[in-house]
Length: 410
Image (cartoon, rainbow, N blue to C red; front, side):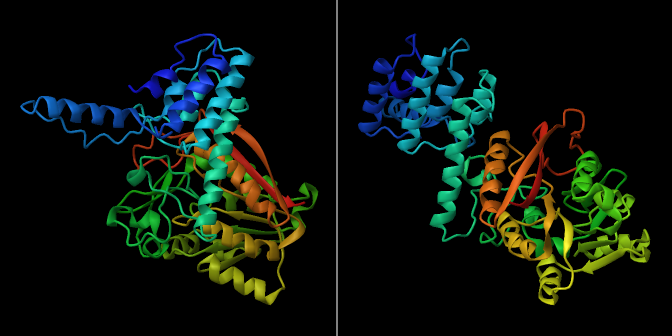
């Protein structure tokens, strides 16, 4: 452990500004990176030992993928009995580390983010330290977007050892620019591949037949029921409402929408296996249902050009799309939704990590604000709803709470 890491274990109490801040600034000004990890320290010490003892067996650490940063050490060492004055000193130290380039979403040797560690040390999501971390994440992601010329690009967990915040629908994916994609992940990362992939309906899930990617699962039923109710701006006038759902999947939310007997119920779906299932189940014969066959990028733009249909509620829940697709969707939604209409979506943005989930909760608010809209969230507990994920390739939602988005014009 370096002197920088040792300092961040808070060996001296109380945690005073006069003792800790100058020392921290000294180490950083001397060139120690704010991202200097314990793993890098260990690798350096091993190299020194090898030089002094060339006959020693070399220990390979190639399999080590963690990045235990100074921020991890700070968060893990935070005293449980910290007082308000000490808390302000730690907050200043965190800000200094961020000023020197500390990363917000690295994963440590226990597979934890700094956010996970802060929560373990009794710092809730509204605490100054956790809010500081979230704000750093927001700033970093927006800056990354700016540097990419406005395009959204996210780091891949497997390559960067950072938590991946991009999870627009069901699975974390790479940036759209990072093709070609490995065959094993192609259905989740590439919509063209997904639309050519065979799907399988099981009792409790819709999955890709070969890879077992979870396209939709019945644990989402409660979420869909809640969402379906918010799509009707006037609960007393559901019979006159026109609703659009983008992505049929298992038809869970569409079944709830139908129960409220809307005037018109549009369903946009592109996958041929899902469309065939919809035909088998009689969705094409329902008098108030209009099926838009194809990708929303094609079918909705046609509606927009015609300018004859406007929606009271729009819901979005697709598979193998990226956050950039969602930003593109906003361009279409503002032209199709009524002034008092409601937009919502299955909110799995960053839900593989609670810190990323909290960061993207805020980023969505910023993005819809650029369209003159506001996003209000309702938080629901998922403690008894999440599955064990045994029958799917990987989990796509690891938080025990859900932020339901309710988006309207300001």
